[in-house]
Image (cartoon, rainbow, N blue to C red; front, side, top):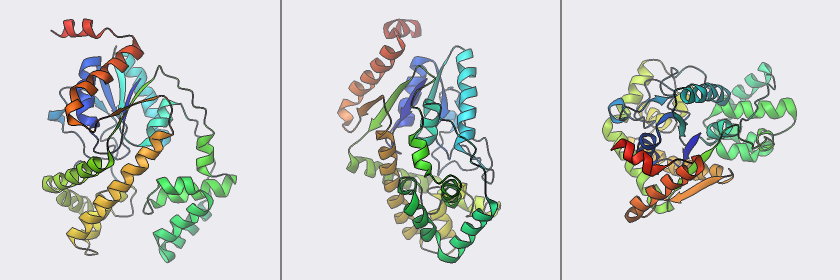
Length: 318
């Protein structure tokens, strides 16, 4: 299995297409938001006509009001990997949702810890009375590691993390840290990184492009379809900020400023998550003049890992 990770806006998508063509891959989206239908601009989905005929999986498989979990992602990816390999192709996960990607790479086991509906409802009422930040602070007190990776508006996951602690007495992060980091795959993970100032500049540029492409209209359509702001999907970056603007809670400029800030913070959390993963071949793509050199280095890493003769492939393609 080939994996390409990195923070948002670092350049994974363009590179993934080249690598997929070269190594005969089918791409599996490792983005927890791209699974939702009708959410295209804010999730930076690659339009079909730009996919160069490369098969993409795990995109548009759920409506925004349908539940989606890391366990479902893992199960689907396991099945997809077998199907792709059966077609004589290389499974290629591309994305930035750390827990989701890592769960597949290392075969995490998600034990059922049960549920306590009364406890869940108590937390919902607590959030309604005291606000999202207060609920997030409750998680921070018992599981600061999980709290750090969850946005305060991600109420469902915050409550689930509190519930896990309530039922087991152990933080969710501690249970994840105890997972055996042994991969069921012959695994090659490429990580893209970039000097922070340039990455932040690219993030802001991408958000400006999303707005030009119609992000506000996309969010407005979702709200009018009845997909409320309380949904996990609608709490994603780009959706919660623009929804707040559309419902009169702030100006568009304020919403965009908040979106850019939160996306920069998200990129920082992504990098923090990836840095604790092992066996990543990191490539710094800060300098554009090194673009060709970086691509060749990445190709060589993959070819060496999977014992692929690039010269032979090149002759075949010609």
